[in-house]
Length: 253
Image (cartoon, rainbow, N blue to C red; front, side):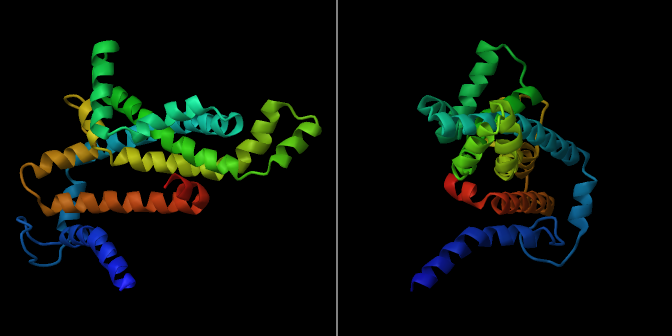
């Protein structure tokens, strides 16, 4: 009975994803019923200039925000674990626990009213950094916690400065966790919709925003095709992150 419940949960979670993938090959514009197999919607997708531009924007935002979040999150994760800074832990993790709608509205008001910034790519990157730093910090903190402290003591006994210990001991040992944190931040950024919706402004679209604008009119197999590719990219990056730092990813979950 227990196995049947587990099987039912997995079917509930993954059956909609399977339907999206299958119908991306459906030879019908209406997408209401299965007509036949075709790769035509993927060809349409790669000829859609607006979709390609939105995908390029998503990749650029994801790479920039993940890079910044990885640097800040790595420093925060090391500091939280080494110095037990509870206030820093709270500051870093608050955006993670905050509802996305509240975070999006708060960032929107911050950019417009306080900073007087024009909404666009820069505001989206900064917004993604704000919610990604916490995830990177958690992954890196768990990686640092798993290290043997005697390695650092041995390096100091041999005359290494704190900076040298960080560069030649700490950084190489936690590098898998840092890479995993970067991949997690990249994954969260590339498929974020709610916070991006509030901070993108007019004239700047990422892939999730483009998909949303398309499904308001009709759900064609092109939407299924781009959703399938986005799903595959997300799953691959998540699996790589779990392979690099399994303890860290489990600790975050």
